[in-house]
Image (tube, rainbow, N blue to C red; front, side, top):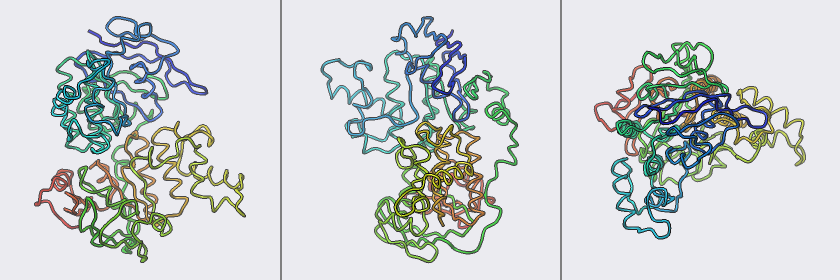
Length: 501
């Protein structure tokens, strides 16, 4: 039995063929992995499957009927986008069932009590830490991610669920919960399309994988018997020597202390003290709510802290002053690059040039030639893939947006770079590029802090790893003397694993 069958799907935009005659078959109770590097065409394909994009050519059959001629059939497809798409000042229950007619509530009047009662069952099922009446703006990002998935499941009579990078904001514990939900849906006969750049998820869940590359289908393959190196080869078009690529920590580090944080306390964290040496990548691990990002944002001046000191290159950084942190040589790259990293409506050139205005201006007037030269060099040095520097940065893949942000940050010649989830939503090929960039910068003497939810990423890149639990440091480990199970035990608060490297 086939729930959805796409044949010969083609979609072109000015200057680019996004999909070039793609075939895809979805069966009930099966998890179909959609794999490919950023820019391979995955997003365009899943939007086509969910009815958001109409193809130029091809057929799309749902339940043996032509969905392109009867768009009502797309109601059988529930789509969970990668980016959060909620109404922050409406309640959890309202977000869960909106639009109300889609999820079985009345078209004119809606009983708030009935909605909240029905929402409670979904909250329990999906493990969302929130009340039905609570505003979405008040709940955590991981719970918002789970809410989006729950909202898709409220869609009446859906037979296909598309999950686009659903674990990008989830911790290991929440990811396990999502896996159980996927297994439940599989048992119910739901066909699932799962998009992920995390190899462990692909191999844990997938029955079949379709690999896209440059808008074309490389083929569909059973996951049974597939190896990680073979899948990477199919995605990238070239062989990858995993044993050579997987270790990206700096080859050497200095004994010189570049950063000293002493007794830092504030909302969400307490008594945080650590040092960072020149040429070192210092990793921070912890569950959501452990205080990782809060500490980094306090150091940079985004958040207030109640006590403690931050010293960079021997100079004390005043609290609540991001401008002073930048002047001292600190740059913070937020995990939410679309909200806090890029200026989406500006071009790649404009986004990068914002950091070098002093270098390209003379007498208050910007030199176009100087701007063009500096931006072109940053694009080349950080391998930002774009058809033109004039292209709006919002149209670049996530990985290329991140490389542009890193290039912009390095144009300021920082002493310290804080990377907060730098590879979130980025394909494995671009991940390796970013790992190599971090390694090169560290070896050039830049101090780097890496906040990551991926234990393998921390082990691969960091020279030391600090673990946080409930806003406090619970351990510090040398990467080459610690396994993943020890790190996981430490971030969940096991006292036996506490260790200072």
